[in-house]
Structure formats: structure tokens, C-alpha cells
Length: 209
Image 1: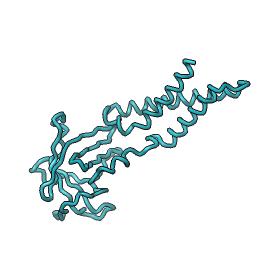
Image 2: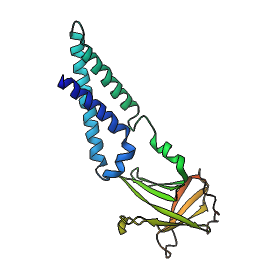
Image 3: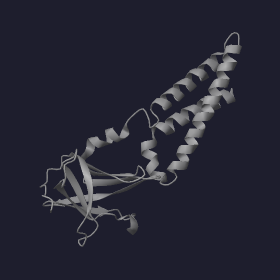
Image 4: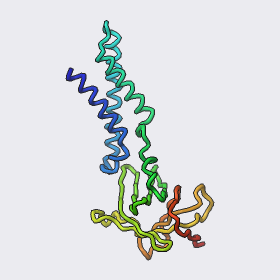
């Protein structure tokens, strides 16, 4: 009985962890990749366990109800995880309901950064590159400039940007507006993020050509 309940518990915990990845991956930073490999290993082990349970189930007469329950649970967990490996619910899409502005920047090696301005005057910078990190803080707007203030627990090396403006894209793209973020007042080039959502309602600058 303990072995039965243990297997069921492992399958359910695995399924829960997979489906809440969006919320815990930013907490472990660079450990995301090892955690991903560990989850893949658990997934493969559960497949092996399922095959064994199916062999035992078909060899039993009459079939054990407990074993049948385990087989059904394992099939459900494995199929749903294989179909939606990042989780059944798109929490990122739900999270955007409170976003006034979303801007993205793609890097090399499938790295990307997502910048969000929230309705509660908060902002997040979510970096995905061999791990997931998230920086949070507050913002306020003066005329056409967005000023960023970071929390006290943020290290100096994580203070990426100090202020930002919205500009028209210099060249034709799928996204006509860019969020241009600056590290300091002497920063003349800035970092361009393509805007995918903008309900901020502030003045849009013409790019300097």
C-alpha cells in the first residue's frame, strides 16, 4: 500500500512542479537547466514504471483496481506533460492582464528578455538565457520618460536600466514601436526592445536619424 501511495504521490508532485514552472524558475536562476534535466529523468523513469505496471496489469486475473488506477494516472500525467511540457495553463498570458506595456528583446543562443510595466506602477525584467532571472522595481512617468527605481535588495550589477522612452522603430518591423532603455544619462545609444503591447498612453518620440 505504501509503494502504491508513494508512486501516486511522485506522479502528482511531478505534474504539479511541471505545471508551476513559470512561478519557480525565476527563483533558482542558473539551476533551471539542471532542474530541467532532473524533470526529464523523472519523466523517463515514469515511462518505465508505466510499462512495468501495464505488463503486471495484463498478467493479473482479475485486474487489480489499485494497479489500474496507477496506470490511468501515469498515462494522464505522461500524455499531458508530453503535450504541454511547459504546463497546461499559460500563466504568462494570464499575467499579462495587468500589464500596460510589454517589450521584448531577442539575443543569441535563444536568449531573450521581456520588460513589463504593470498597472500598479511596478515593472519586471525577465531574462531567459541558460537560466531564468527576474528583476523587479517601481516606475514613474515624467512627460515622455519612464524612470525606473529598483528594490533595496537589488545588487548594483543588476541595475540594468535607469530610464526609458517609447520611439517609432527606425526600420520597418512587425512591431512599429520600440522601448528604448538607457543605463545612465551619458548613454546615447540605449537598448531597443520591440513593443508587443502598449496601453501606457504617453508621447511617442521620433527616432533620431
